[in-house]
Every structure is written in structure tokens, then in C-alpha cells.
Image (cartoon, rainbow, N blue to C red; front, top):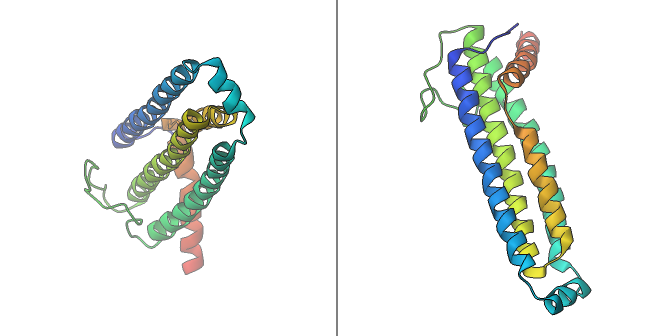
Length: 191
């Protein structure tokens, strides 16, 4: 249906790329700090830390798993709410015309629906990346406290996972195309 993003959607993807990149970069900087600080520990501290039960590291692993679960629930809930709102001709929850730096909505029709869905995509992508970032920071703090490799490994895996949130214009257009089918199906059921 859509092959090329509009200039507004391209700008939205660029803004989202900057935000996700800054979240990832913040995690990488803190990862570097945590690794440098851990490398500065004396050998007797490292042996003592490795012998201790990694309670915080296990809590960090639990936080990471729960965060990923919450991310899945949040994404599916926001998608369902967004599709339902667009099908009803309304702005999705948390998405308002002209809010902040968002441009005004185009006139009624499929372009308006696509733009509303693009805003849903923006919110979902940003919220998902922020949730994962929180779990990364928790695990890096626990690594600083305990010195366990488990917390460091979990943080690194989560940072790599944040790359999955990298927005692209093609990904946005494909996502909108799928959601427009969902909107059409909802409108068909409402009749």
C-alpha cells in the first residue's frame, strides 16, 4: 500500500533514530564506566566477590526477564489500543494532533490513519527501548556492587537487544501497512 514514507514520517523516523541511539549510547558509556571500575578492583576483592552468592545479580536477571515480559505486554496493549482508536477515527491514547513537535495530521482518509499509526509506532518503539535501558542500568549498578559477571553479561545482552528497536523508514511503512489491515478489519467488524 505504502512504498515510500512521507517527509513527515521520514522526519519522525530520524527523530526516533536519534532518541534510540542516545539511549544505546548512554548504556554503552555506563557499561564502559562499569568495566573500567571493575578492572580497577584489587585481586583480593575480585576473589571475595566471586565467592559470594550473587543475590543482586540474580535480582538483576529477574528484573531483565520481567522487563522484557512487561515490554511485550505493553507493546501489544498499545498496538491494540492504537488500532482500535484509529478504527474509530480518534487519536490513539497518548497521541494528540499538534502535540509537542508533532506536525498536524493530514486531512481525513488513509493518510490520516497512517500518520496516527506512525505516532503509535513512535511511542511504542521509544517506550520499549526505555524499558530495556532501565534493566541495563539496574544490571550495571549491580555489577558495580557485586562484581559478578552475570550482571555484566545480562547488561551486554540487553544493550544488543536494544538494537532491535532501531527504527527504519522501511520498518515503519511495513508496520503501518500491517496495522492498516488491522484497522480495516476492525472497521469491518464494527459495521
